[in-house]
Image 1 (cartoon, one colour):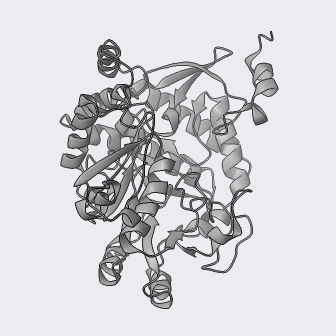
Image 2 (cartoon, rainbow, N blue to C red):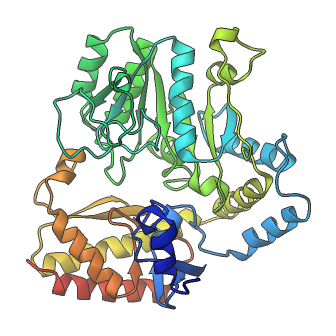
Length: 420
């Protein structure tokens, strides 16, 4: 057997990866805000598992909660106490969540959210925004990251294996363009089941009035408004983006943080819509079947409950924002000093650099930026032992003052060595 994990990965995994991240990075372990790769290299971690580890790795209280549940059983395929408690806490925190249904992944949650919008309205068409990430379903893979830019509202599939018929039911709009969205609603009047949107699309914030206008149009035209809060849920604020922006959708999807680092996601929404998961509440042709072997898994629920308990403690979100603001300020200062045109886009809890002179309001603005430069900048950061995705910094509460200082030094070095 080969001892080198990279060689072993190349032999057994397509592309030598799980499909998520750079195959050159193989993680051995993590603790707090740090991870170590299989070669023993230590990194300050701004990837944080693509978002779930908001408290850091191996958080002691979360680990204890998981160990306590392990003594009582790992899964049951039956409703369990921890899952009910977590659903209740989500219901208290999230404005739209009158009822909750658990699944295992955020992509699965978004798939069911779109499906239940169709079941509730009896219509088939969905509006999604170009560049919005909603998982791996056929609908979600429409114009996620298109290389050829079709005329709106025509979708471009981002994956092989998607039936051509799916394209006919998906309408693509530019994010932050309410006038175009209104025109679609008017043109396809009475045919639209739902609008699915990331309240913060990847790192791009909504312009003033955009989410409010979506809410108004959906109410006016009996369209289900779906907030994909897999990323923003319990991150922008305890009540997520809907609390932060003061706009309440009909349905939201949650993931990442609610599982405390374990596979768990959820759909939360108004009872009249969520009733379509209950075959005793609707006609058979309106019933939405949903089963999942690990849905509401008690270990994930226990980890999620403890994570949410810690996030509720006084000052946690202020601490999170303070850490992020320091790094955003450092990026702006050092990149400006070295003469690189850029914008820092996002929120202190999740953000990144876009190398451009223009304002950034949608996917095409990102696409027209200097993508080679962000690749180079991330490589320079990696060489300074900073681990992040190509698209964002995720901030965790585990970051220490020393971590922030080391990161600022890495930002300064990377800014000074970035090609103009």
